[in-house]
Length: 419
Ligand code: MN
Image (cartoon, rainbow, N blue to C red; front, side, top):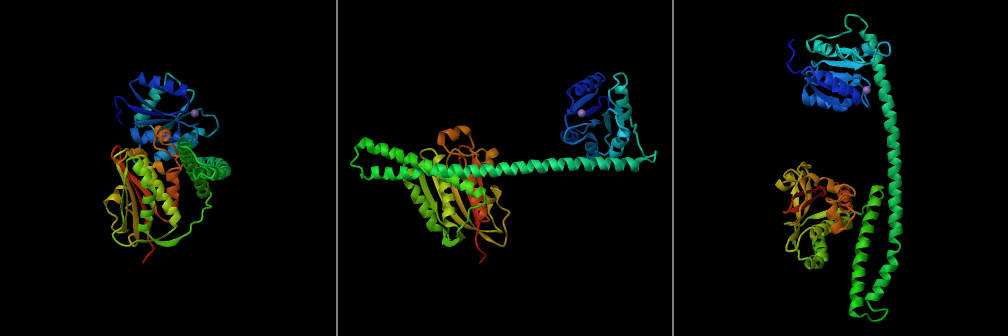
């Protein structure tokens, strides 16, 4: 076998000093050295770099060197790449177990700096160590299998207890959120009562300045209330405790309702609201209040992120599962049940848009596309994740397509009852 002029060696080793030493020794001889620090990233590097030879430390974190060697030998296209173990031959049979695991040779640590490059060259030239002739291979294979199962068992029990801890923390977090939300909600009731008394003049007439102060407080109160409602809804959905009240209702009146409720606010911000109902009568069986909540949230967001002079459009249309259409394909929502019909509710704006790389994360809990926007528009990033949960609880899907600085379009797809 001819040795390449500048052989490429992948060295998988977690110890910095060892990596530096081997790199120095091999580069001096004209070798190219690629490094990886554990078994998993070593396997990745091997697939990516197709080295001429792999030097494998056996004592690696997470996935040991023998296991990585077994994995590499089973990887298409890698079976022929020599994997040479580098390790202290401490226990009887260390070397043999490595060969049984799939290594093609064994270089003992500490490395002999005089002979090391030649040893590597020997393996590059086609030299292989093997158990085949000794007849001991089955015994070492059995020992290696035992080691593997031991390791697997240790990892599984560690994962299990980590999972238990996570679940317990998750439960505590839910409980905390729930308590917090209730505590926050309690003082809202008297605030609202007194604000109403002031606004309606029950406590005597207000001058203009006082009136506008009461108006400002009321606005802040409404925003605070919405944030707390979101937290409560989130805590409830999280714990799986929300029950949905399904009734049958036509879609169009709901669209009108949520649009009209937002008309004044949009006007004040200089944003035009448009609505396009379905071409035919579409009847949904769903929790009307919850679906309204989703649309309200999407509209509020759209208005919030659309600059003055822009527009926001709410539309609805029926979609056949076997003909989803281009806009749904673009949103990744084209894999529908071909035997069903759906209603597609869309909220499109001419706002600041969402960068494609964050378009999926915005439906995750506590996410807001940009920390700077977060400060500018105030929110805790729960609205979209709540919307997603509500829609998914109806067997539906939610997605967004967007172009930065051109606008976003949110797509809500809910299956209709079979006719
Ligand atoms: Mn090590």
